[in-house]
Image (cartoon, rainbow, N blue to C red; front, side, top):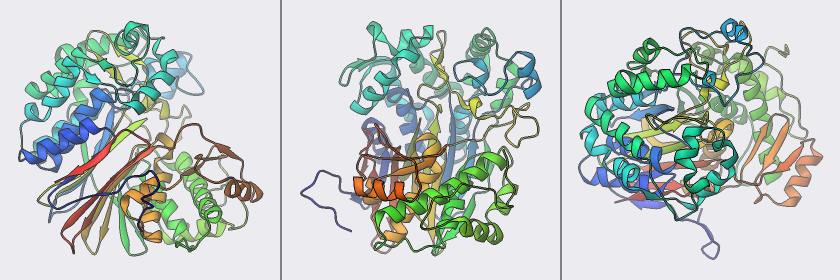
Length: 528
């Protein structure tokens, strides 16, 4: 499918040796530099995410979590769970005693699980990296200590969160220099974050989870009512865990995701449901968005009721043929329906990057602090901004995602990978919080059902059925919206676009790589 060159847009990047795609041009450039210096896909991904932790501070950082799917050339596909766990003293009952019921507040210490990103980066690097961490962090350290120019989409998002940043002393000092958010093109620096990266490059994960940094973070959180201890941080140092990917077949392609506690299971459930319908290029747009919405509502309903820190067990059931057929029967092509569980019984902000290197190693890498600027808690002594992933826990005893000691919450962040005939053909990912599972399914459908290249599939107009509303981007025509409303959807138009995405297609026959990066963000794909 060739784009209209008379309209604004992007062409996919085509290269023969290697490609990196991220949501920020400085991160993509850092990845490409590492690839050209002899680093592999893992090295390039770590260099890129370190840069993004500086230049996209509202999206990601060392105070967050990460997941990875890594497909080494000729080897089995690996998944790495780098999500953090709740403190050992945390439970539904413990928070109730402190007066916290209903849900965990975002702006507070209970929203912070022990961050898992640094443990994931260092384990992945130790097992599969080639160049030293100090080399990989060079660009990120320079941008943190000497400053970088704020990109337009970053500035837009930053300005939207100014009122939140005002609430925290540490955030005000770092993210509201001169009393306001930096504007596009202005310079911003985080010297303390640069020092933390230097420490990690020298001493590995121990620099974050033990010693002065851990002591400062624990004291900072406990002063705000947190239940964190030095033992919780020390236990997290080796907490990144290799897990077996889960997968489903979608029209002859194998789609791989990380198992729960991530929501990749929901993406596979959406695809399983859509597999019973014709979504080829001839289908009208209203029907396409309608079918995606109905499949999404069903999958997310199951996710919210049944998915937590449960590993692959629940996935085997929810991806079974019996469940898939039950969900397909629930979809009315002509009318929006309320979602129910397959048993018929009712139960009451992020970055992604991908790299393929000259040897054919492919990585899909996602790192997040959840909400924009996470918990909006920044420790002034360390410069570490802490994520808000603990808000995903349910404060309901017996729920699969209930807060419990050292439990990991259900995660929205999910890397993805596509294989065909036993070979990797596409690392990909979609950012956007809750949207990610729905975005994975829409992207895969664009590639496989409509024959789009990766850039066109990324660019396609998006919709998202969530919390009883069908959100649509402004690029979706009024006539399509009217037809969706006629079918029973409550439709709202979004002021900002839905998420962002990166992907690299591996054309084995031609010996070429085709990269795409979302124009909804500042980033790009580059190759050589």
